[in-house]
Length: 587
Image (cartoon, rainbow, N blue to C red):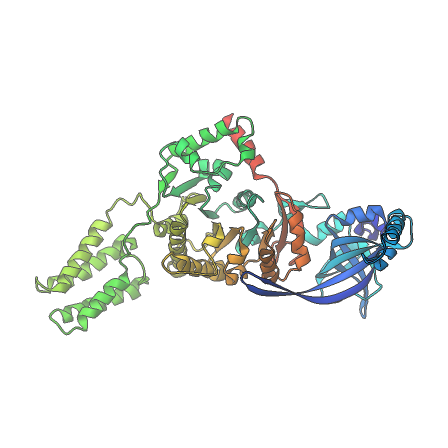
């Protein structure tokens, strides 16, 4: 790539120089307190040109010349807001007489594109990268350098931006606005290092997440995706995958396709497509007939664990009453079994393998036979033995969240599992239990340690609010999700969050996200929370107000070629994929 190819063709008409560079701190006081954001900004002054002004209204990157002790380089900045300026604007104010002010305005209006007293002020933010041209090719490096006043600026070309941002080969997640260029990323890193999707109602959060889920499943055949869905959106968005490789768990009654679809949100834009509603009904009928919709049990009594048996034996052995010796012997035998078989004391005894369960029954039976018939411990041991024998033979068709986590890690498990729980209380309870057991199985038992599991939390403000209570399970779900975000990556357990109210989220959880998509957030405080959490300039986030449905500000520490570069993208429409797949299923 020649130097000519590195800079945009419009660069020949762009005469920009840096006029000012400064560090500013902005403070915002909102509903949840005060937030301060510190950022670096630059003002680049360019000769006025209509083509340049129009181009700068779209996202673009600028390369600012910089001489250093080791040679010549370019600092990469992202242009945010161009402002056309006329010299007479600086001296005009409302205190002027109306006639004089009119003369000023006439002079200013007639001067655009003609007068040398007009220019463009461009607000730009640093990407903290520099570009060196080596053998005619751009190479990019992290940099702490600041620009020098008066240095020339250039507009980067489409090809230079591609080499700056895109991973080859990679997965396309959208088109870069202003460049008509597919942004390709490492989709594996998007999963591995957690991600967040933030946007107001109607911005297309579930549409985007569903598209990304499709791409991750294409990339990793062994990946398992579990979606905690409160709003009932993901069954429709992933209906073609669920019909062949997925399952749905819900507390709602869904005996036929009509009930199933009635419980879900069908986007109007999808519903209005000719023949699509009929195709959805047919696909939903197939899901029902194939037995892919199941009830989920949230009412089970508390599990009986090995720890519980140990505590009962410990209590009896230390009481000094009749049977204390038998309890002490049983306690020792059970302890040796735990050590020998490497059992987790917190495991539900019904989840033990057949051999381990039989050995526990043998230990308890031996102790029970030595006890008096009226002994309280004998009664407890009898109940435990009965529970072990009968409970292990129970029909376990109705899964609870704990068993669901084990199923997800099992062989032959569905690739996508949608857990539709419209009541936030139920969703939080199920999520906390699912995560606890998933991490326990991964960390302690080593069950299918190599399999990646991605948990998607829709309406994340319900699961990780900043204010919690124990009685509504916000405390339990908060702690579980934060544990997953902090430690899950070590055990190949990952999380994506989707929400419209960032201000109400647990900030500690937010800090664990390495990639995030931001669309329209009307409340200023939500945007400031993101700016503070991810070290972004507030001017950058204010630009999201102008985004259309399906357009996103995307930033990633891991998934793009360079770290933490804000980009604006237009994501593919998942509804187009649904329509295409369903039409094929109809044929």
